[in-house]
Length: 135
Image (cartoon, rainbow, N blue to C red; front, side):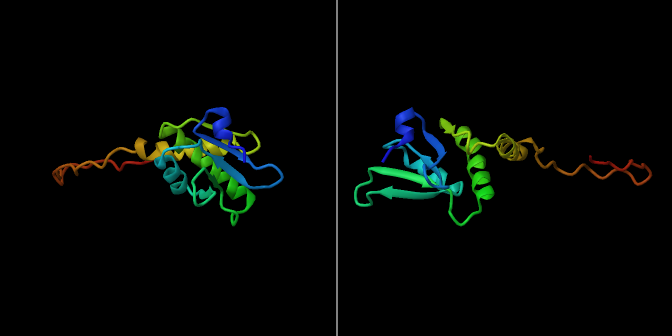
């Protein structure tokens, strides 16, 4: 079995397995457990071969998803992996710039929201404050 992450020196190689429609995420031999855990948290399924001796571990996008959702899941995983400090390579056949940018935006959105503030002291009733509008 070829391990593209070992071959290319990356932490994660995302591609469509030859002669299939399955999206794979290869990790290098001896990859840290945290990387495998993160891939699972992102929705990928873990596989091991052989099961008695963990020589080769890879992840796939779940087969029960339709092809668009599979591609969406793979592209959403990339920014989270990069943010965690991993090097990722994604085959152009899988990579979708718009899906990737949506995932980046979703990761940044919670950080961009202002922290909840303490309510301001009540003003005197004689003072009228214009209503605030949000875009």
